[in-house]
Amino acid sequence: MATTLFFLLFFTPFLYSAAAPNHNAPQDLVRSSCINASYPSLCLRTLSSYSGPTGTPRDLAQAAVKVSLARARKASTYLKTSVTGKSKRERAALSDCVEQMAESVDELSKTLSELKHLRGETFEFQMSNARTWVSAALTYEDTCVDGFEVVDREVKGDVKKKITNVAMVTSNALYMIRRLDESGGLNR
Image (cartoon, rainbow, N blue to C red):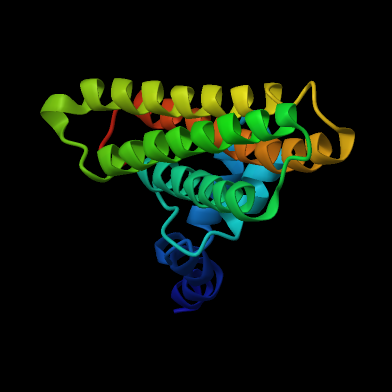
């Protein structure tokens, strides 16, 4: 009787904790996934505060692309509505950047659609597409920033700050896609 009581008192908490669901699992996955991202603190901040699912590598890849897409859209809208070039050179750089950000948004949109429809028989092909499209989006973002190297400091600084932030979250999205690809799983 004393042995049974001892067993129940001593081991019951351990048995319960082993069987209890781990509600921190998604946050643990975010932390462990972001640690090696290109911009770990930005990755952790954006994905920890993401309101959608983040419990699997697939969820994280989709979340990272959604964050990047939202920021690219916001930057694109800002460029179209809030920035005006004073000189001919600034207007040309701005026009090019607006076009490049529209292309970036398109590439990220295709990527998100692909990630939402992953299938076992075409997984490798789809992941190749996703990596290619996010890499292209990143190139468009970098090219946009490069176009402002020869313009007024004020315009350049403002645009560069916004687009660089988009490029950073896009780089993290590419990392999450690579992690998903390496996991080889659709639901893992």
